[in-house]
Image (cartoon, rainbow, N blue to C red; front, top):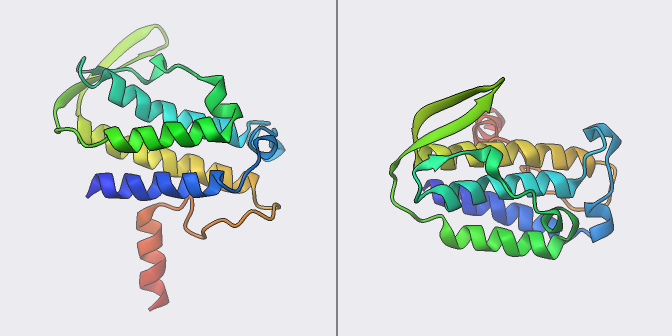
Length: 161
């Protein structure tokens, strides 16, 4: 069920990328502190890539991402990366260690594959909301629910009844 939600969210991103030129994808957005849609997209992709590539090691460290400039500058590369992720998500839920360095201290906490998938999904939706801000004044067709948390969508539907 979680992977279905991830598939839906990542396909929404692919659908959006299908509408963008590389120029729009790489144009700094003042409202996003001059970040680009490509940078936000790369960030989402690379968090999933970290989880998948470090899964067998049992220790996940999101700071060890590649920061692949091709993903943030070419929509075709980003779409290929997204499709590759979708093919790799279906893995057994195992215990993992999440590792991160903060202020010179290494922090390690226990987690699971499913928990990290959920984190990555929520994180991606958050970045999609930022991408949506970058496109508000454009003619790009954006799904009204793009970048909106599923709980918010459900709440809005409940209110509409």
